[in-house]
Length: 275
Ligand code: KMH
Ligand code: ZN
Image (cartoon, rainbow, N blue to C red; front, side, top):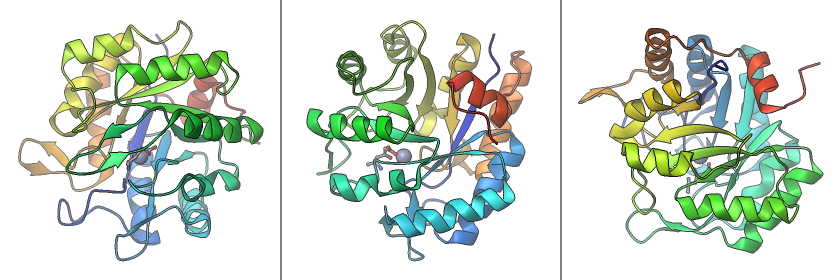
């Protein structure tokens, strides 16, 4: 079985210090959280950025500063900026970090409710626009799917040339408005991706670790982090993203799965090796 790629979604756009005081907003806090995850075994950092007061932004310069600061401490880690940003942002606002030519970025493959009155809008034309941008800039998309129909959208747009194959998916399970995070939800998504694709699973809240275990057994990959879940176990806040990654490493060890280094993750995902 391939080694396990662990992604740490260290920050997100919605989670706040009120949920867990270790949620990073400042440059220094982002570096601290990325480093803790990297040292624990994460090879990919899925990155949103905030202004110092916690407001989410897709500002290119803010991304540049934080990505450079993370690289100083985690020289070979794969940094995967979000192009989802926060609900309500325009397409061009969201696309700003792609101008920095990251190795990877997220590509959200459909529209869904996102709690309360929020709607996370990704029309077919938006997905084509984002997909085209990633092809032009040689950025590997992580196709974020919040439901099975989004896999079908990604497959259809890949056939039309908007997404390169083999595709890499992220099953985000447990968002209010998307698919749930039970075993049958996972197997439904898992069975729908084309052969030769890779996937990671991001379970929201209480789904984080049970889904991680399923992916470890199945040969998939795992995303954890404050974006998805702030608890180490029921009622116990994680002190850092690193603690969440450490728990996945422990599960993987018990289940006999080795952890991929960033270089191995690049190989598995078909990214160019670092120069
Ligand atoms: N913050 C969500 C609205 C992504 O990173 O691409 C979108 C999101 C997805 O987090
Ligand atoms: Zn995200």
